[in-house]
Image 1 (cartoon, rainbow, N blue to C red):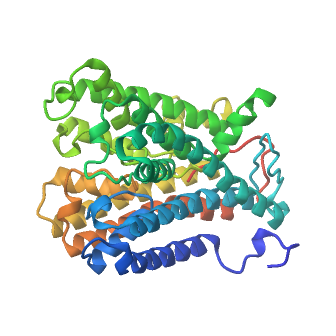
Image 2 (image 1 turned 90 degrees about the vertical axis):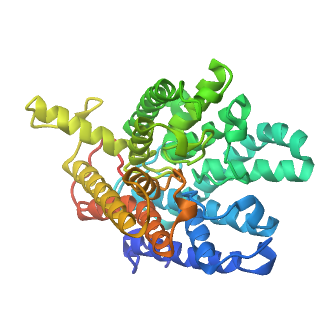
Image 3 (image 1 turned 180 degrees about the horizontal axis):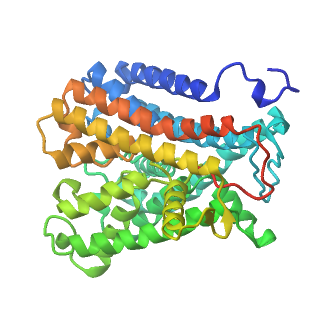
Length: 444
């Protein structure tokens, strides 16, 4: 493509290009994971494909232990697949926003495109570099406190590797760990809990939110996307923590096994924030009460911010649907959020994403119910986790049949790509309409 042509001139539909790229990356990753130097033992092609798909879609569901099954080179391949999958979708989300006439105004003045036809390839290239650069900076900063914990425990080489692996996995909301019990061994560790949760919350918030916060000291104003993500994250994190603490504090298999209140609160915090959509766990998910499992499923369904590394229906979708419900109950004909009108296009995106997510969870639950010998809660939880690319499981993942693994891989792939694809396609249909001079809420 020539330098002077605009993004609209792409001969291939961008969502199709993204899906094809992810598919190729999954297949290449599976092939690399099957090579002898990647393994410490045997690994079937099905397990290699599942692991690669989980890494590229940054889900974190695994059918084999990462730390023991794979050699250093295999773990490095998984790390690169996680980074490519997480940053690949985050970058595409930002570029899709620009392609549809969106604006990003930040301290570094990344891009300020006023309309669909004003998005220049040079701006897109610069923005992509900024997305990747910002991610590497955040991961590098988080590496330091993690290393201070894990180097004394594992030595220099292994300690640094553990720190790097978990930093990348957390920022990209992947949920992969090198420990067989995730972070259960660090349920009460303040540094691990604080750093890991900060990483996946920052990554899940998204590039636009990060830039908006960095720019706030100069502008003293926040974009509606930043407000929605910050408010939604705060409410869901606090309420989720309190609910899980209340439901699990007397459960001797989870929070009740921890010795004091601060330990229980740290574990409750991690378990309340990780479903959107990181997939780490510091308590045994298979042992949580049925009520807690339903709370976790709701959080997995909601997910992260629109332009972040997480999935789910996204925070903005939830806010738009709640605002539409409130407007209907009050018999209002206009829809507003933070005193700003919400366009019909945005409402259509929110409805499309939510309906597709509900349909996907239902179809996935139905399919798993037919292929797996497990209870309804277990298969529904697994389907929700897969389509939300979360990575939490009540123990079903390791016991999946071949057909079950195929179903979960499809759900992970669809859950990772479909919300953004729907948002792009709906936005494209309205791209020629008059653009608002005010910031528009991003869905997807």
